[in-house]
Image (cartoon, rainbow, N blue to C red; front, side, top):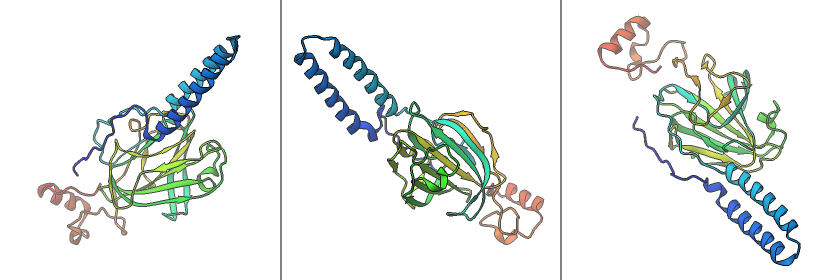
Length: 266
């Protein structure tokens, strides 16, 4: 699959431009009024220092580093966000797959980059948003009870994975760029969550997971898992478009595909 890069070479995320502009105008207005309205300049200097700190935090929050994964992406699942791994466990997923999945959750603090990246290459199958509560994002029930946006992606190998953006106690604005039917790639932004929250990734059972609880992740850089071979309903390896040979022993199928230059769906 050809890799189409739609990178936006920006240092401040577009979701923060209006917030930063409005905050700058407000800070300048307040500090100007204090400077010219008070004979004693001490309050002005105090407010000015506090204003610089607050504005610096906002700029840091909305920063948008340009990152390229730079490695082979086949079967690879990368971290969709900066943060800390707070969950790695097998769960029952009842909103889309209706089966058991491996859930890997990344919690983003206020100091993390809040842009979210696509965790895999593939095609967006489904996108939906659900209203909900605003509990602390690291709580287990946040994944099912909080306001959230969900994106299902099918990889080129035919494996479906799900990424879920979750609002938290402070994060009450989830932005999702994914659209059903469009191709998506590692290195591209999937969305943005304002003011701290969490991203869950649901993987098929048997996926090799490389991260552990408490580990720090870097969005679009940290490899969190590698997908296993896709199997058909009979539990056999699937070799499209040669599925008519699927009844043959697997070693023969492998030799056949190797001799004919066919890549199995692995």
